[in-house]
Amino acid sequence: MTGRSGQNGLVTDRGLQGTTDGRPHSGGHEAADTTDLVIRMDDVGVRRGPTNLVRGVDWRVEVDERWVILGPNGAGKTTMLRLAGAELHPSDGTVHLLGERLGGVDVFELRPRIGLCSAAQAARIPPDEVVRDVVVSAGYAVMGRWREDYDSLDLDRATELLDSLGMGALADRRFGTLSEGERKRTLIARALMTDPELLLLDEPAAGLDLGGREDLVARLAALASDPDAPALVLVTHHVEEIPPGFTHALLLREGGIVAQGLLSDVITEENLSATFGQDLVLQRSGGRFFAWRRPAE
Ligand SMILES: Nc1ncnc2c1ncn2[C@@H]1O[C@H](COP(=O)(O)OP(=O)(O)OP(=O)(O)O)[C@@H](O)[C@H]1O
Image (cartoon, rainbow, N blue to C red; front, top):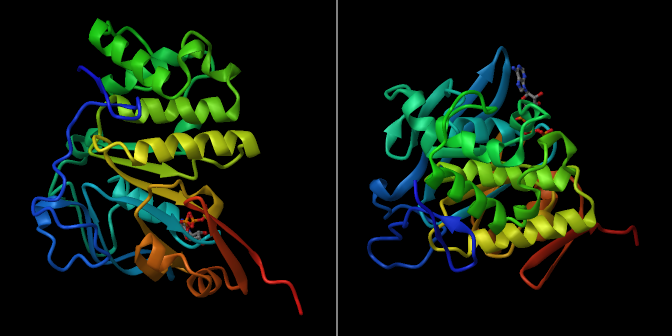
């Protein structure tokens, strides 16, 4: 593996195709060539007993798009991300990832093409693992360094990725000694190590203090604006955590889609109020969103 720096210093390896016809981002995907689609879900449902975790989901993600999935607790966000990460099969409908249909492809071939950052994954990292090894071991599809002999190019790439996420000085520390924010940045570096075509981030700002959240939002904004970065899907409960440069949003409530499309069309007071079941006030400033409950008259 070799790495190169994108325009924001974030290291990405693979040039994205971009849209083949040069058209701008569009909320509607009717005209999209399916070969450009990173995620395609058609009438997807996931059921567990009588419960619909998600239902009736039609969703298209193109290579150059950066999506946020927003919704309250229990809305089905993680379920959507697990479908997109080839960790879960739908009960109904079809899911295509990177041009392959779930159920018709070996998921062990598909998963290395998809980077996933989640709290569940962080919990699997041994606390005594050295930070650089947490990152480099992703290229060998293992969690925790064992007896692998890592290629010096891979070690260089891990170092470069850690540098680009402000973790260079901590590369020799043990994972268990890191702060929550430093762990999140390490996991993002690990997810980028395999040069994925799709990067899935499940609540990356959860548990961070204000400074940590703002630092992460700025780094994700830099990643979003890097033309060589993979397609991005970020799950969050909070509009304040949407990094500038994200292009699209999907709002979920009780397993169903409330709205989806271009971020500026979808993140509105009306849609947010419907999603969270509260009368919300929304403000936008400097490419960021801020929301709170409308005070009683
Ligand atoms: N195996 C299961 N059996 C029954 N219900 C489940 C199962 N797994 C998840 N659920 C339920 O499905 C709903 C959606 O879960 P999911 O984790 O996708 O929501 P979420 O939007 O990510 O929630 P949160 O924001 O709280 O993490 C929740 O109500 C959850 O309790």
